[in-house]
Image (cartoon, rainbow, N blue to C red):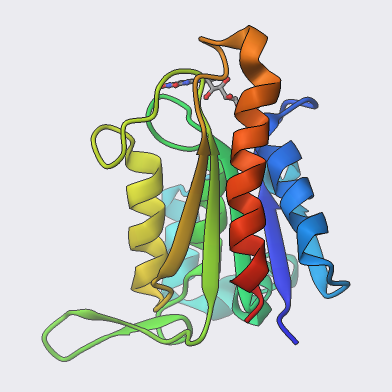
Length: 196
Ligand SMILES: Cc1cc2nc3c(=O)[nH]c(=O)nc-3n(C[C@H](O)[C@H](O)[C@H](O)COP(=O)(O)O)c2cc1C
């Protein structure tokens, strides 16, 4: 049985990325699924005080420890991860970055080799990235959000990563249903084997 974590991040109530993620969740036909809307999480600012606490994890308050551990544990315990986000100025909403900052931990999700290369410690996981764009998405060219997330996942050993893009959402407003439908068809294909 594969545990699925669906992470959505658009603050918009009519968000395309959230809609596609919810539809994909239905396609999986599993009850072992959790949803996390990171746009609703009040992530801390990474100021000097907090970074000093990270140097000595014991100095975190119980509440702070629980916050970081909860996010990291959700990340670790999921066998399948779905990240849904809009293109915001060529990256993703900061809440996705904040989620990953909390989820990744040296010695738990990755470690360094003696020569400094990172070694991912999470095995057997798959991820799916669902991206919505107002304009045209040009693969691997300018959109750093997807390539950054792929890198951040690989850091932890997650390299089986698919992506589905619904682009031209703002440029072709009158064709939104067709754009969504096209993305749904790609998601249907991925859903067939996502839990394998
Ligand atoms: C702050 C902000 C920045 C954006 N930057 C881009 C961009 O650089 N390129 C682009 O194609 N669309 C951009 N958009 C448009 C969104 O990607 C587009 O509306 C997307 O479909 C919204 O996804 P959602 O419905 O899941 O929230 C931006 C939107 C916002 C709010």
